[in-house]
Amino acid sequence: MRGQKTGVADLPLHSGEVPRWLFQRMALLAREITAIIVMEFGTAEFLRRLSDPFWLQAFGCVLGFDWHSSGLTTTTCGALKEGLKNLGDELGLFVAGGKGGTSRRTPEEILARGELISADPAGLVYASRMAAKVDNTALQDGYQIYHHTFVFDREGNWCVIQQGMNPANRYARRYHWLGEKVKSFVCEPHNAVCCDLVTEPLNLVAAESEEARRMNALLACEKPEKLIKELNLLKSLSLPPRHHILLEDISPNRLYSVFLKTYEHQPQDFVALLEMEGVGPKTIRALTLIAELLYGTPVSYRDPVRFSFAHGGKDGHPYRVDRRTYDQSIEILSDAVRKAKLGQREKLEALKRLSRYALRGD
Image (cartoon, rainbow, N blue to C red; front, top):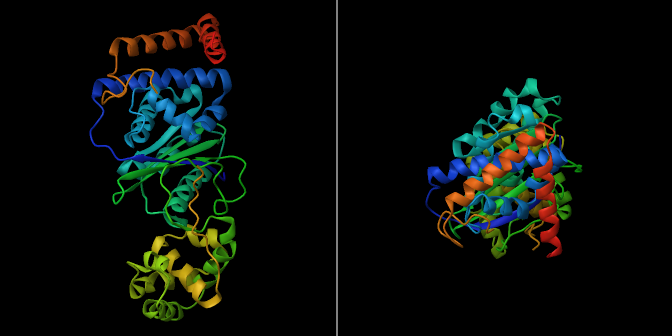
């Protein structure tokens, strides 16, 4: 049930809402596109595509959202969830979570599908929770997670699409996870990262932070009094500029109760520490600073960054959504899916041929 982060995308914050007439069509078109991909390639392949930030961006554009807007993430995921609401059992594909308060209902929505899947739903809940914890706590890049969508299939394959907001630079950063081929949640979980802005984060999921992760877990087992003493000492030292970012907003005395809890539980490793309720960004930041002060433990500040026009966009970029064309697209795909279920695959084969012609430039 472990996951692989496959990408990050940075998007400017946009205001405004999707009109209901467009969202309804987005849900219908998302349903038909998903059904065809699942019929042709299976649910695992659809999850792989969702975990690709560029594919999701293209998917959102085809559905009629503006290509460079942060709202593409939440709206596309919302349309996918709405479109598959009554089709999940048939396809063996389910969507949980969403934006704001809806994201906090992800565990119960996963568990509600327990009888429909062959995997242990508790493992899926754990994967969902750890993906959010890692991006909010172990990777501190200035973006607060406010959207979390968890997509999974009957066999227990899964992917996560979540997004964080940075009000200071008015950008949103998207994080993608894929539930396959990864050994650890906390060591280089990214496969690819895609964004425009580079920050200087506290990156405890970098390979070069392995010793820092180990020392975090060891220090968490120390008596709170010792840790508070070291933090107060840090507050009085003259430190390099980068430490100003890490030390701000840390109140040693307020962390006492958290340190008492970690001391009582004695976490065996960094993953166990990260799993603990109440252990958030400030706790991890404080332990990392103490480890660096006491033992010279290196930690990475490397940002995990390496470096649409089918139906128009809701704000009129590159042009206004053409409702008639949009409805025709839904009708064509819906008819192709319906006939394919009856063994009549002519329309699906025609769509395949059309895509091949487009790729060749014929």
